[in-house]
Image (cartoon, rainbow, N blue to C red; front, side, top):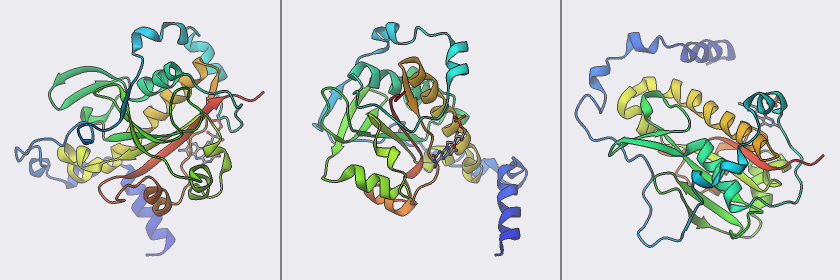
Length: 254
Ligand SMILES: Cc1cc2nc3c(=O)[nH]c(=O)nc-3n(C[C@H](O)[C@H](O)[C@H](O)COP(=O)(O)O)c2cc1C
């Protein structure tokens, strides 16, 4: 396929015309299959840390929405100041926090999602977070806890390399990596799922920008990375789960 053909295919992909070509009565949901879990399972007894809940965020969200919107910019230079656990919890809750559970497999969160499918997991490279070991953690939105995934030497350098040499990606207090589990969205929308997944991701990252601004921190959305290298680094299979988007966050350097 030459680049003109590829461009045409990709433009077509952006359109919701897929609805006219796809028979929704054939989706897993229409066939009566149970939905995939709203959160990737983890072994019983795994190491987790409880996070401060929204009742403790009162002091963090005092700035007006107007001023946050006016000030928001992508930030690539961070201070050495760590995030407190409450600040990190606030950012996680703002991006994926569960605010209602209308059914056993349905969550409503601080961000919208097509069909309320919420097909993302949030991995964190915790670099400077008070009380947390440096390494890769995963947010458990249903429990509002952090799950320790792994630590290994040289993570920061390897993460930067996997992001095509963008060093700032590992220089904040914490880096957010949003993986997608397409099956959660495909269950309802079949091949129409893939158009809405990046739309969902935009909401998540925008909430991170605004919540970070509220605590004097900055964020930079990152969409350029080596897919194979980053999936391998985060120990994702690259097929049923892979990285879609990422953003480092940290206190802003003047
Ligand atoms: C989808 C997306 C992908 C991006 N990818 C990168 C990236 O890989 N590296 C980078 O330095 N900035 C990246 N950015 C940040 C943009 O460069 C930035 O938003 C733009 O320059 C406008 O600046 P502002 O966010 O301060 O308004 C990305 C932004 C978006 C929305």
